[in-house]
Figure: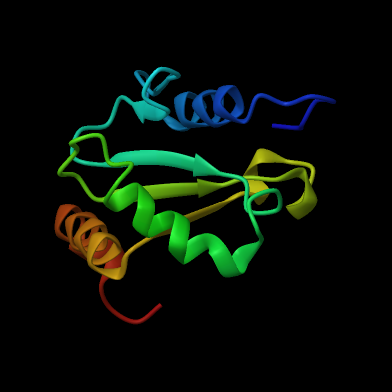
Length: 119
């Protein structure tokens, strides 16, 4: 998906996730969270305007603690900016290693023949 002049990153992310096969992926503007997948707290930042990549760990910790709005779920952060490329696919996703490992284990367990072994 290509960016428009004034993109709504939340709308682009939701459209991308729906096109990828997650039909109920929406953005809750009141709580500044993405909804539609249970067990995760999806958020978005724009590091170019929030102090750069050096501040990403700080913002990540804030979304886990003071900005978690009572959510016990692990944070998955979308990092978006037209500075990184003209397409939504050029965005990044940041999560903690334990969250990523849990996702990867579920993926491998669902189809071990595909994901285990050499290449």
